[in-house]
Image (cartoon, rainbow, N blue to C red; front, side, top):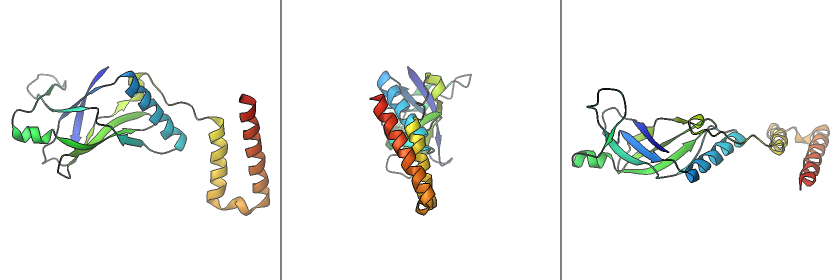
Length: 169
């Protein structure tokens, strides 16, 4: 599946790429799903990794409608604007986008976001074991582990989780 994404630049007076073209194959789609699952399980806003998959272009502004039509750079300035580095794929539990810098500058860019639903994928559900570990982590973070009652609950939960894991094997 080929996607054409609009690009937003951090500095309205700077030049940078205006469109990104990305081929989302099965491998990339699977990786996006893995990262979305990780974001959900870890309860973080996003997970990101270096990923230079998109190709970057300028945008044809002569078309009548709002459709994004990428075009190659016309001159040296536009060519420099389309050179990018530190490109990352940023995945949340519900969508993804790419970000990076125009090469040799501090000009940041981000593509528009793409919903996971647009690809027909969703993060994997949080396994029950993770919920148990979250409860233990919360106890550790709040300092309530010194309480003997909490220690007993933690032991019981860990044992129950371990026995459930043995039953599944």
